[in-house]
Image (cartoon, rainbow over all chains, first blue to last red; front, side, top):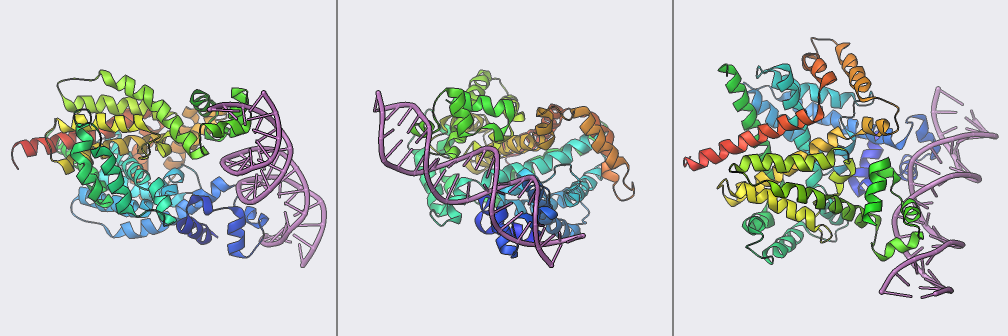
Length: 216
Length: 216
DNA sequence: ACCTGAACACCGTTCAAGT
DNA sequence: ACCTGAACACCGTTCAAGT
């Protein structure tokens, strides 16, 4: 059932997942889904956790010497899963019993942070910040244009170039930032953008750990 | 109209904003809303930008010597707006013409980053990372429990303590991270959590700027 | 124990008709 | 130019009835 739900979501976006469509795909009646799930909210939570099962599996092979490296790779696996699933961000990591894999993932990230030797509060904050960042960026990147691209109406390059052109047409005195980044934006790679911000955060985390190790 | 829409969203959450409820509040018919807005999506985009108007106003007074300080304060104003409006994260910063304030906010953040003297690509990445982080964390924090709290069913403290208890009951060998942070989680302050992660990212950004200034 | 599908309440959107 | 509200297609959810 969850395979079917994730399939519908991946193929045609969040609006394609209806009880009727899911029942049709499974070859059953609308009502029978309610035997396994109590609401659409729970269906989406369980679908999210179903995706996290794969994320968890893929991130289990990272056991390097540097905990920061492990964190980077673990975060990137999650990013890969959320990048084209904007719905995932809104439903995972709800502290509910129907999301055991999300909790395990949180624990995994946390264990890498633990190796940095920070205090409990800093450890809690750092692990939450990393996951929050991944979700935030992925939600940002997987928005409206993506939906139109799913329907094949707009190509990504054209969309970016169009937005960049609009920025270039603005007054440079008033919009120096948009002018500076217009070229970068038009040709940017989403994964690069994600990685850069992640590295900023991980650099800050490494700095915090070093400071603490020096007893500051 | 947008005041009415934001009012409904703030009072009873995203599901309370329906065309019928909005029409009733405005004392008109359902169809008349379509004279001003072409779809519910656009209504939410404009409502989001309506909120951003206030965010923009509040963040205009930051002009300190340290661009990083400006960034921190500008980010915190946005956080304050999104914290209790989980719907905002999904609708703002779509590069559409109906969101001029979001674009202005992006420019504002970007101008502070520009003062750090990085290259165009790093500038683009840093500004996007900061905003992505704010949205991600705020979306994380403003989830399900908040909705139940809106209905007055669960108090925040009880909810956190309950989750922490569930973590404490797990095997400590297998879940060292959750055991380490259970106490912190039970008593944590959302704004503290947000600020800590933001500072990690800003520390990393400062480091990057210093490296570049030294010509590395 | 598990499934069915008609029925219900509600939603976004359209549109002929009004002022 | 702006508003009205019935009508339409569709949705999540319920439930009496089936196996």
